[in-house]
Image 1 (cartoon, rainbow, N blue to C red):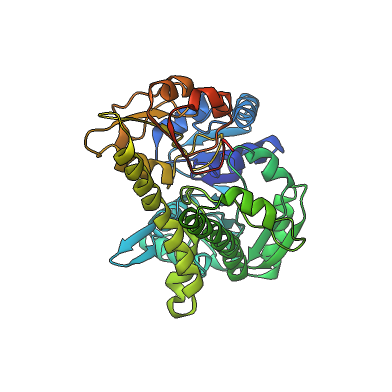
Image 2 (image 1 turned 60 degrees about the horizontal axis):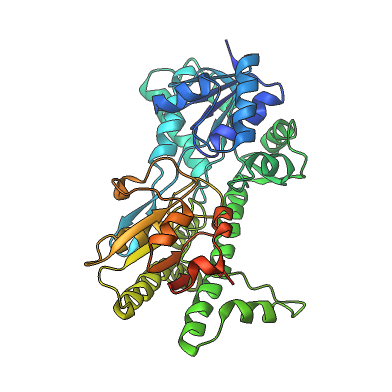
Amino acid sequence: MIYDICVIGLGYIGVPTAAIFADSGKKVLGVDVLEKRVSLINSGTSHVGESDINAMIAKVVKSGNLNAASKPESAEYYIVAVPTPFKKDHNKKLPDMGFVEAATRSIAPVLKDGQCIILESTSPVGTTGEMKKWLKDELDKIGRSAEVDYSTIEFAHCPERILPGRMLSELVGNDRIVGGMTPKTSQRVGKLYKSFCKGEIFLTDDRTAEMAKLTENASRDVQIAFANELSIVCDKLGIDVWELIRLANRHPRVKILNPGPGVGGHCIAVDPWFIISAAESQTPLMRAAREVNDGKPGWVIAKVAEAVSRCKKNNPKIACLGLTFKADVNDVRESPAIKIVEALSHFDDCVVLISEPNIVEMPLTLAGYANFSPKEAVSKADIVLLLVDHKQFSSISPDELSGKILIDTKGFFK
């Protein structure tokens, strides 16, 4: 059987992508090296904690439009949606394309003439071109070069634009950029995404598409860095940063974002480094923004240490509200909240209480810690540290916070 689409990587991007294509009538195979993810899909659910996605998966698995396996099978289109982390090299953070390369090479044994490979993973400029080289090299290695007319294989980059917590609506409603290595490929892939996308499809080349996604996230990183730096200045000057931002945003051409404890998630905390590593001397602003945002957790930790020093109780209890990287999701990737709580767990003569209503299991670095309800954590605490503005925390009343030292990194209780 030749599938319409083979999605390689069943993470936060691959799962909804596979589901939405299957729901549009395509025969889809989802592939992942983690057997647990494969089993979950085949049982009609996933590890992605969004009810509408899991409901759709149950529907399309039952219809036979979606299956999952540990290895690719032949398909008209292969969509690569695997992680693209960075690796640390002294003072540099360099892109790690190991997962993309492995996924690309895994296609070689089942590749047929005329098939198309689409990269959705956010990647440095030039990665789509590298995929073409990796695939040719793998075909040579396994002795399939004579079987496949490589000149007929097409490549494109189509970056995702989805927000955890609203994945399906964003997949359907957002505009998409499609960057083929040839105009013909852009047209072909654009038609594929139009099968479910109600937003506008913009066609370009692969390198521009790669740079577009990096630019979007680097721009947001710079804007967040301004807000985070502003919050540190206001703290020094005794000014309420939340009121200040509300007033400044009354200007018709000013839109300052709200500060927080840092920047998390797989995109904004990672993608600017892909641009910086490619043009180090041309990116002082992006590097400065990364340093500001990476440094914000340390500033929060220092604020907690100051609060501990002026707390009159012995062995003060610190209620840490939230661990995920953003509100109302179960995603903890690159979460600054986790970095902060990890550091606080090493404080002498303090007790850390954690409340994270959106996860079932604690991260490995915090294994052994109980997960209290918001009200229980606050009731036991001497210091309350709000790290994530989850809607569940709105049930905490001013009376319950009375008499406690409050450190609100999101302005949630204002």
